[in-house]
Image 1 (tube, rainbow, N blue to C red):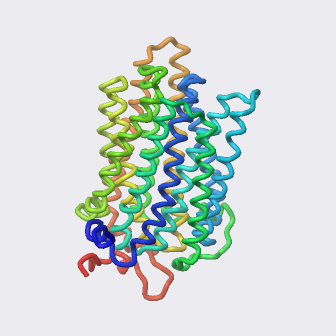
Image 2: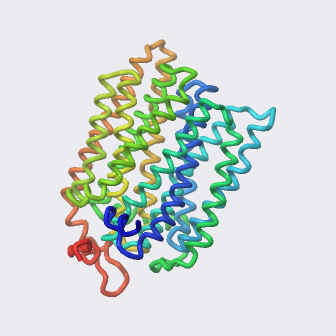
Image 3: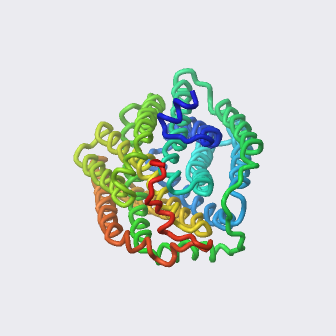
Length: 448
Protein backbone atom coordinates (compact mmCIF):
# COMPACT_ATOMS: atom_id res chain seq x y z
CA UNK A 1 0.00 0.00 0.00
CA UNK A 2 2.80 2.39 0.91
CA UNK A 3 4.60 1.65 -2.36
CA UNK A 4 1.38 2.34 -4.29
CA UNK A 5 0.91 5.72 -2.58
CA UNK A 6 4.55 6.59 -3.14
CA UNK A 7 4.29 5.90 -6.86
CA UNK A 8 0.99 7.73 -7.35
CA UNK A 9 1.86 10.84 -5.34
CA UNK A 10 5.62 10.83 -5.99
CA UNK A 11 6.38 10.30 -2.28
CA UNK A 12 9.89 9.07 -1.54
CA UNK A 13 10.79 6.47 1.12
CA UNK A 14 10.75 7.92 4.62
CA UNK A 15 8.44 10.84 3.75
CA UNK A 16 5.02 9.22 4.19
CA UNK A 17 4.93 9.16 8.01
CA UNK A 18 5.60 12.87 8.44
CA UNK A 19 3.18 13.73 5.63
CA UNK A 20 0.37 11.80 7.34
CA UNK A 21 1.17 13.38 10.72
CA UNK A 22 1.14 16.92 9.34
CA UNK A 23 -1.86 16.16 7.16
CA UNK A 24 -3.89 14.90 10.12
CA UNK A 25 -3.25 18.11 12.05
CA UNK A 26 -4.29 20.16 9.02
CA UNK A 27 -7.34 17.93 8.57
CA UNK A 28 -8.51 18.57 12.15
CA UNK A 29 -8.07 22.32 11.82
CA UNK A 30 -10.16 22.53 8.66
CA UNK A 31 -12.73 20.03 9.95
CA UNK A 32 -13.58 22.41 12.79
CA UNK A 33 -13.65 25.43 10.48
CA UNK A 34 -15.92 23.64 8.01
CA UNK A 35 -18.45 23.18 10.80
CA UNK A 36 -18.29 26.63 12.36
CA UNK A 37 -18.06 28.53 9.06
CA UNK A 38 -21.54 27.47 8.02
CA UNK A 39 -23.10 27.59 11.48
CA UNK A 40 -21.75 31.07 12.31
CA UNK A 41 -22.64 32.70 8.98
CA UNK A 42 -26.14 31.22 8.76
CA UNK A 43 -26.78 32.00 12.43
CA UNK A 44 -25.62 35.61 12.06
CA UNK A 45 -27.63 36.28 8.88
CA UNK A 46 -30.75 34.84 10.52
CA UNK A 47 -30.45 37.29 13.43
CA UNK A 48 -29.07 40.50 11.82
CA UNK A 49 -29.43 42.50 8.57
CA UNK A 50 -27.08 40.89 6.05
CA UNK A 51 -24.96 43.97 5.29
CA UNK A 52 -23.94 44.32 8.94
CA UNK A 53 -21.71 41.32 8.42
CA UNK A 54 -19.44 43.71 6.52
CA UNK A 55 -18.72 45.51 9.80
CA UNK A 56 -17.98 42.16 11.43
CA UNK A 57 -15.52 41.41 8.63
CA UNK A 58 -13.81 44.79 9.02
CA UNK A 59 -13.47 44.32 12.78
CA UNK A 60 -12.35 40.74 12.24
CA UNK A 61 -9.56 41.77 9.91
CA UNK A 62 -8.49 44.49 12.34
CA UNK A 63 -8.20 41.88 15.10
CA UNK A 64 -6.26 39.68 12.74
CA UNK A 65 -3.72 42.39 11.99
CA UNK A 66 -3.27 43.00 15.73
CA UNK A 67 -2.93 39.29 16.48
CA UNK A 68 -0.46 38.65 13.68
CA UNK A 69 1.52 41.73 14.75
CA UNK A 70 2.02 40.09 18.13
CA UNK A 71 2.63 36.75 16.45
CA UNK A 72 5.38 38.23 14.27
CA UNK A 73 7.42 38.80 17.43
CA UNK A 74 7.71 35.09 18.05
CA UNK A 75 7.23 33.30 14.71
CA UNK A 76 10.92 33.63 13.80
CA UNK A 77 12.27 33.28 17.35
CA UNK A 78 10.81 30.10 18.81
CA UNK A 79 10.27 26.53 17.73
CA UNK A 80 7.40 26.49 15.28
CA UNK A 81 6.43 23.05 16.51
CA UNK A 82 5.86 24.53 19.99
CA UNK A 83 4.00 27.47 18.48
CA UNK A 84 1.75 25.09 16.57
CA UNK A 85 1.03 23.13 19.73
CA UNK A 86 0.27 26.34 21.63
CA UNK A 87 -2.21 27.67 19.07
CA UNK A 88 -3.96 24.28 18.93
CA UNK A 89 -4.29 24.20 22.72
CA UNK A 90 -5.63 27.78 22.82
CA UNK A 91 -8.21 27.03 20.13
CA UNK A 92 -9.31 23.90 21.97
CA UNK A 93 -9.85 25.85 25.19
CA UNK A 94 -11.83 28.60 23.43
CA UNK A 95 -14.06 26.05 21.68
CA UNK A 96 -14.72 24.42 25.06
CA UNK A 97 -15.73 27.76 26.63
CA UNK A 98 -17.73 29.31 23.75
CA UNK A 99 -20.77 26.98 24.17
CA UNK A 100 -21.43 28.71 27.50
CA UNK A 101 -22.54 31.84 25.63
CA UNK A 102 -25.26 29.78 23.88
CA UNK A 103 -26.33 28.18 27.17
CA UNK A 104 -26.81 31.46 29.06
CA UNK A 105 -30.40 32.69 28.77
CA UNK A 106 -29.62 36.40 28.93
CA UNK A 107 -26.68 36.35 26.51
CA UNK A 108 -27.69 37.79 23.06
CA UNK A 109 -27.54 34.99 20.51
CA UNK A 110 -26.43 37.38 17.76
CA UNK A 111 -23.32 38.18 19.81
CA UNK A 112 -22.66 34.46 20.28
CA UNK A 113 -22.71 33.93 16.53
CA UNK A 114 -20.53 37.00 16.02
CA UNK A 115 -17.93 35.64 18.47
CA UNK A 116 -18.06 32.27 16.75
CA UNK A 117 -17.54 33.88 13.36
CA UNK A 118 -14.63 35.97 14.65
CA UNK A 119 -12.99 32.87 16.13
CA UNK A 120 -13.42 30.89 12.90
CA UNK A 121 -11.95 33.61 10.73
CA UNK A 122 -9.01 34.24 13.07
CA UNK A 123 -8.36 30.50 13.04
CA UNK A 124 -8.59 30.40 9.24
CA UNK A 125 -5.87 33.01 8.85
CA UNK A 126 -3.58 32.59 11.89
CA UNK A 127 -3.25 28.80 11.99
CA UNK A 128 -1.92 28.48 8.41
CA UNK A 129 0.76 31.12 9.06
CA UNK A 130 2.39 28.95 11.70
CA UNK A 131 1.66 25.65 9.98
CA UNK A 132 3.06 26.60 6.56
CA UNK A 133 6.06 28.35 8.11
CA UNK A 134 6.82 25.03 9.81
CA UNK A 135 6.38 23.18 6.51
CA UNK A 136 8.92 25.48 4.84
CA UNK A 137 11.34 24.72 7.68
CA UNK A 138 10.91 20.97 7.23
CA UNK A 139 11.20 20.73 3.45
CA UNK A 140 13.52 22.15 0.83
CA UNK A 141 12.03 24.16 -2.06
CA UNK A 142 12.30 21.15 -4.37
CA UNK A 143 10.51 18.92 -1.86
CA UNK A 144 7.97 21.66 -1.27
CA UNK A 145 6.98 21.83 -4.94
CA UNK A 146 6.29 18.10 -4.79
CA UNK A 147 4.80 17.65 -1.31
CA UNK A 148 3.01 20.90 -0.43
CA UNK A 149 0.01 20.13 -2.68
CA UNK A 150 -0.28 16.66 -1.09
CA UNK A 151 -0.20 18.01 2.46
CA UNK A 152 -2.53 20.85 1.48
CA UNK A 153 -5.12 18.36 0.22
CA UNK A 154 -5.77 17.28 3.82
CA UNK A 155 -7.17 20.76 4.44
CA UNK A 156 -9.81 20.24 1.78
CA UNK A 157 -10.66 16.74 2.99
CA UNK A 158 -11.16 18.13 6.50
CA UNK A 159 -13.29 20.93 5.10
CA UNK A 160 -15.49 18.41 3.25
CA UNK A 161 -16.08 16.36 6.41
CA UNK A 162 -16.82 19.52 8.42
CA UNK A 163 -19.28 20.77 5.80
CA UNK A 164 -21.03 17.41 5.71
CA UNK A 165 -21.51 17.67 9.47
CA UNK A 166 -22.86 21.21 9.01
CA UNK A 167 -25.22 19.93 6.32
CA UNK A 168 -26.47 17.25 8.72
CA UNK A 169 -26.96 19.95 11.36
CA UNK A 170 -29.21 21.84 8.94
CA UNK A 171 -31.40 18.72 8.72
CA UNK A 172 -31.10 17.19 12.21
CA UNK A 173 -30.46 20.35 14.27
CA UNK A 174 -27.65 19.18 16.53
CA UNK A 175 -27.21 22.76 17.72
CA UNK A 176 -24.17 25.01 18.04
CA UNK A 177 -23.38 23.85 21.60
CA UNK A 178 -22.79 20.20 20.67
CA UNK A 179 -20.82 21.10 17.56
CA UNK A 180 -18.51 23.42 19.52
CA UNK A 181 -17.81 20.71 22.10
CA UNK A 182 -16.97 18.37 19.20
CA UNK A 183 -14.43 20.92 17.96
CA UNK A 184 -12.85 21.11 21.42
CA UNK A 185 -12.45 17.31 21.52
CA UNK A 186 -10.77 17.01 18.12
CA UNK A 187 -8.36 19.83 18.98
CA UNK A 188 -7.36 17.85 22.06
CA UNK A 189 -6.52 14.99 19.68
CA UNK A 190 -4.48 17.38 17.49
CA UNK A 191 -2.55 18.61 20.54
CA UNK A 192 -1.71 15.01 21.41
CA UNK A 193 -0.35 14.45 17.90
CA UNK A 194 1.88 17.52 18.14
CA UNK A 195 3.10 16.59 21.61
CA UNK A 196 3.87 12.94 20.93
CA UNK A 197 4.65 12.79 17.19
CA UNK A 198 6.26 16.12 16.28
CA UNK A 199 8.26 17.20 19.31
CA UNK A 200 11.27 15.07 18.32
CA UNK A 201 11.34 16.33 14.74
CA UNK A 202 14.39 18.45 14.00
CA UNK A 203 13.93 21.55 11.87
CA UNK A 204 16.36 23.98 10.31
CA UNK A 205 17.87 26.74 12.44
CA UNK A 206 15.59 29.66 13.22
CA UNK A 207 16.59 33.17 14.24
CA UNK A 208 16.48 33.79 17.99
CA UNK A 209 16.98 37.55 17.93
CA UNK A 210 14.49 39.53 19.98
CA UNK A 211 12.52 42.30 18.31
CA UNK A 212 9.89 44.86 19.14
CA UNK A 213 6.61 44.99 17.20
CA UNK A 214 7.94 47.96 15.26
CA UNK A 215 11.15 46.09 14.37
CA UNK A 216 9.24 42.97 13.38
CA UNK A 217 6.88 45.03 11.21
CA UNK A 218 9.76 46.97 9.68
CA UNK A 219 11.71 43.79 8.95
CA UNK A 220 8.97 42.30 6.79
CA UNK A 221 8.00 45.61 5.18
CA UNK A 222 11.60 46.56 4.33
CA UNK A 223 12.13 43.19 2.67
CA UNK A 224 9.02 43.61 0.53
CA UNK A 225 9.93 47.19 -0.37
CA UNK A 226 13.49 46.16 -1.33
CA UNK A 227 12.52 43.21 -3.54
CA UNK A 228 10.43 44.47 -6.51
CA UNK A 229 8.71 41.16 -7.26
CA UNK A 230 7.49 40.87 -3.68
CA UNK A 231 6.37 44.51 -3.77
CA UNK A 232 4.10 43.90 -6.76
CA UNK A 233 2.92 40.58 -5.32
CA UNK A 234 1.91 42.54 -2.21
CA UNK A 235 -0.16 44.94 -4.30
CA UNK A 236 -1.86 41.98 -5.97
CA UNK A 237 -2.74 40.41 -2.60
CA UNK A 238 -4.09 43.72 -1.29
CA UNK A 239 -6.33 44.00 -4.36
CA UNK A 240 -7.36 40.36 -3.93
CA UNK A 241 -8.58 41.17 -0.42
CA UNK A 242 -10.90 43.84 -1.84
CA UNK A 243 -12.31 41.86 -4.76
CA UNK A 244 -12.78 38.55 -2.92
CA UNK A 245 -14.54 40.29 -0.01
CA UNK A 246 -17.00 42.02 -2.34
CA UNK A 247 -17.68 38.81 -4.27
CA UNK A 248 -18.26 36.87 -1.04
CA UNK A 249 -20.68 39.44 0.37
CA UNK A 250 -22.66 39.55 -2.85
CA UNK A 251 -22.96 35.75 -2.82
CA UNK A 252 -24.12 35.62 0.82
CA UNK A 253 -26.57 38.47 0.31
CA UNK A 254 -28.04 36.95 -2.85
CA UNK A 255 -28.30 33.48 -1.32
CA UNK A 256 -29.83 34.72 1.93
CA UNK A 257 -32.52 36.54 -0.04
CA UNK A 258 -33.09 33.71 -2.50
CA UNK A 259 -33.14 30.69 -0.14
CA UNK A 260 -34.47 32.23 3.08
CA UNK A 261 -34.77 29.60 5.84
CA UNK A 262 -32.93 27.06 3.67
CA UNK A 263 -29.80 29.23 3.56
CA UNK A 264 -27.72 27.00 5.90
CA UNK A 265 -28.45 23.94 3.78
CA UNK A 266 -27.53 25.84 0.60
CA UNK A 267 -24.39 27.38 2.10
CA UNK A 268 -23.16 24.02 3.39
CA UNK A 269 -23.78 22.38 0.00
CA UNK A 270 -22.24 25.32 -1.88
CA UNK A 271 -19.14 25.28 0.32
CA UNK A 272 -18.96 21.51 -0.12
CA UNK A 273 -18.90 21.83 -3.92
CA UNK A 274 -16.08 24.39 -3.65
CA UNK A 275 -14.14 22.13 -1.28
CA UNK A 276 -14.46 19.02 -3.45
CA UNK A 277 -13.46 20.94 -6.57
CA UNK A 278 -10.51 22.35 -4.64
CA UNK A 279 -9.41 18.85 -3.61
CA UNK A 280 -9.35 17.71 -7.23
CA UNK A 281 -7.44 20.79 -8.34
CA UNK A 282 -5.03 20.64 -5.40
CA UNK A 283 -3.71 17.28 -6.60
CA UNK A 284 -2.89 18.95 -9.91
CA UNK A 285 -1.57 22.24 -8.56
CA UNK A 286 1.96 20.92 -8.09
CA UNK A 287 2.10 19.82 -11.71
CA UNK A 288 0.56 23.10 -12.84
CA UNK A 289 3.26 25.06 -11.00
CA UNK A 290 5.99 22.85 -12.46
CA UNK A 291 4.58 23.25 -15.98
CA UNK A 292 4.14 27.02 -15.91
CA UNK A 293 6.83 27.87 -13.35
CA UNK A 294 6.40 29.98 -10.23
CA UNK A 295 6.42 33.30 -12.08
CA UNK A 296 3.67 32.51 -14.59
CA UNK A 297 1.57 30.64 -12.02
CA UNK A 298 0.94 33.92 -10.22
CA UNK A 299 -1.35 34.85 -13.15
CA UNK A 300 -4.12 32.46 -12.13
CA UNK A 301 -5.52 34.46 -9.19
CA UNK A 302 -5.67 37.99 -10.68
CA UNK A 303 -7.15 36.79 -13.97
CA UNK A 304 -9.70 34.56 -12.22
CA UNK A 305 -10.68 37.56 -10.08
CA UNK A 306 -11.13 39.75 -13.13
CA UNK A 307 -13.21 37.13 -14.97
CA UNK A 308 -15.34 36.42 -11.88
CA UNK A 309 -16.01 40.06 -11.01
CA UNK A 310 -16.99 40.89 -14.60
CA UNK A 311 -19.34 37.89 -14.75
CA UNK A 312 -20.89 38.83 -11.42
CA UNK A 313 -21.31 42.44 -12.55
CA UNK A 314 -23.24 41.51 -15.69
CA UNK A 315 -25.17 38.51 -14.26
CA UNK A 316 -26.89 39.62 -11.01
CA UNK A 317 -28.40 37.19 -8.54
CA UNK A 318 -27.20 34.05 -6.82
CA UNK A 319 -26.62 32.11 -10.05
CA UNK A 320 -24.11 34.71 -11.17
CA UNK A 321 -22.50 35.54 -7.83
CA UNK A 322 -22.11 32.02 -6.43
CA UNK A 323 -20.05 30.56 -9.34
CA UNK A 324 -17.98 33.76 -9.56
CA UNK A 325 -17.04 33.73 -5.89
CA UNK A 326 -16.38 29.99 -6.08
CA UNK A 327 -13.92 30.47 -8.94
CA UNK A 328 -11.82 32.97 -7.00
CA UNK A 329 -11.93 30.96 -3.77
CA UNK A 330 -10.83 27.75 -5.48
CA UNK A 331 -7.98 29.50 -7.27
CA UNK A 332 -6.82 31.27 -4.09
CA UNK A 333 -6.83 28.11 -1.97
CA UNK A 334 -5.15 25.78 -4.47
CA UNK A 335 -2.75 26.93 -7.17
CA UNK A 336 -2.16 30.39 -5.75
CA UNK A 337 -1.56 29.26 -2.16
CA UNK A 338 0.81 26.47 -3.20
CA UNK A 339 2.63 28.83 -5.54
CA UNK A 340 3.01 31.54 -2.88
CA UNK A 341 4.40 29.03 -0.40
CA UNK A 342 6.86 27.70 -2.98
CA UNK A 343 7.98 31.27 -3.75
CA UNK A 344 8.30 32.18 -0.07
CA UNK A 345 10.58 29.18 0.41
CA UNK A 346 13.22 31.19 -1.46
CA UNK A 347 13.18 33.82 1.30
CA UNK A 348 15.99 33.39 3.88
CA UNK A 349 14.90 31.41 6.94
CA UNK A 350 15.37 34.29 9.38
CA UNK A 351 13.03 36.56 7.34
CA UNK A 352 10.48 34.14 5.95
CA UNK A 353 7.98 34.23 8.81
CA UNK A 354 7.68 38.02 8.80
CA UNK A 355 7.46 38.18 5.01
CA UNK A 356 4.75 35.51 4.90
CA UNK A 357 2.75 37.42 7.51
CA UNK A 358 2.70 40.47 5.23
CA UNK A 359 1.89 38.58 2.04
CA UNK A 360 -0.63 36.11 3.47
CA UNK A 361 -2.19 38.14 6.28
CA UNK A 362 -1.60 41.89 6.60
CA UNK A 363 -2.17 42.91 3.00
CA UNK A 364 -5.21 40.72 2.19
CA UNK A 365 -6.68 41.76 5.55
CA UNK A 366 -6.20 45.46 4.82
CA UNK A 367 -7.81 44.89 1.43
CA UNK A 368 -10.73 43.09 3.09
CA UNK A 369 -11.18 45.95 5.57
CA UNK A 370 -11.25 48.52 2.76
CA UNK A 371 -13.61 46.39 0.68
CA UNK A 372 -15.96 45.81 3.63
CA UNK A 373 -16.11 49.48 4.62
CA UNK A 374 -16.61 50.61 1.03
CA UNK A 375 -19.47 48.16 0.53
CA UNK A 376 -21.07 49.05 3.87
CA UNK A 377 -20.81 52.75 3.08
CA UNK A 378 -22.29 52.27 -0.40
CA UNK A 379 -25.19 50.17 0.89
CA UNK A 380 -25.95 52.45 3.86
CA UNK A 381 -25.90 55.52 1.62
CA UNK A 382 -28.02 53.80 -1.01
CA UNK A 383 -30.63 52.67 1.51
CA UNK A 384 -30.93 56.23 2.85
CA UNK A 385 -31.55 57.39 -0.74
CA UNK A 386 -34.05 54.65 -1.47
CA UNK A 387 -31.89 53.11 -4.20
CA UNK A 388 -32.68 49.65 -5.56
CA UNK A 389 -30.66 46.69 -4.31
CA UNK A 390 -29.51 45.83 -7.85
CA UNK A 391 -28.12 49.34 -8.31
CA UNK A 392 -26.15 49.16 -5.07
CA UNK A 393 -24.68 45.77 -5.94
CA UNK A 394 -23.59 47.11 -9.33
CA UNK A 395 -21.72 49.96 -7.63
CA UNK A 396 -19.72 47.84 -5.17
CA UNK A 397 -19.12 45.11 -7.75
CA UNK A 398 -17.72 47.82 -10.03
CA UNK A 399 -15.19 48.54 -7.27
CA UNK A 400 -14.33 44.83 -7.31
CA UNK A 401 -13.68 44.95 -11.06
CA UNK A 402 -11.31 47.90 -10.62
CA UNK A 403 -9.41 46.11 -7.84
CA UNK A 404 -9.09 43.00 -10.04
CA UNK A 405 -7.66 45.10 -12.89
CA UNK A 406 -5.07 46.51 -10.47
CA UNK A 407 -4.13 42.94 -9.49
CA UNK A 408 -3.63 42.00 -13.15
CA UNK A 409 -1.40 45.05 -13.71
CA UNK A 410 0.58 44.14 -10.57
CA UNK A 411 1.12 40.63 -11.98
CA UNK A 412 2.70 41.95 -15.17
CA UNK A 413 4.91 44.31 -13.18
CA UNK A 414 6.00 41.40 -10.97
CA UNK A 415 6.90 39.33 -14.02
CA UNK A 416 9.06 42.15 -15.37
CA UNK A 417 11.13 42.24 -12.15
CA UNK A 418 11.03 38.55 -11.17
CA UNK A 419 14.47 37.43 -12.40
CA UNK A 420 16.18 40.56 -11.13
CA UNK A 421 14.55 40.12 -7.70
CA UNK A 422 16.01 36.62 -7.28
CA UNK A 423 19.48 38.19 -7.18
CA UNK A 424 18.50 40.94 -4.71
CA UNK A 425 20.75 41.15 -1.63
CA UNK A 426 17.73 40.61 0.63
CA UNK A 427 17.39 37.10 -0.78
CA UNK A 428 20.91 36.13 0.36
CA UNK A 429 21.08 33.56 3.14
CA UNK A 430 23.30 33.90 6.16
CA UNK A 431 24.49 30.31 6.19
CA UNK A 432 27.84 29.69 4.55
CA UNK A 433 27.78 28.49 0.97
CA UNK A 434 24.05 29.05 0.57
CA UNK A 435 22.49 31.30 -2.01
CA UNK A 436 19.23 31.93 -3.78
CA UNK A 437 20.56 30.17 -6.84
CA UNK A 438 21.17 27.07 -4.71
CA UNK A 439 17.57 27.18 -3.50
CA UNK A 440 16.24 27.29 -7.06
CA UNK A 441 17.40 23.69 -7.48
CA UNK A 442 17.75 23.57 -11.25
CA UNK A 443 18.74 19.92 -11.05
CA UNK A 444 15.08 18.86 -10.56
CA UNK A 445 15.38 16.36 -7.70
CA UNK A 446 12.46 14.26 -8.94
CA UNK A 447 14.63 12.88 -11.74
CA UNK A 448 17.23 11.50 -9.31
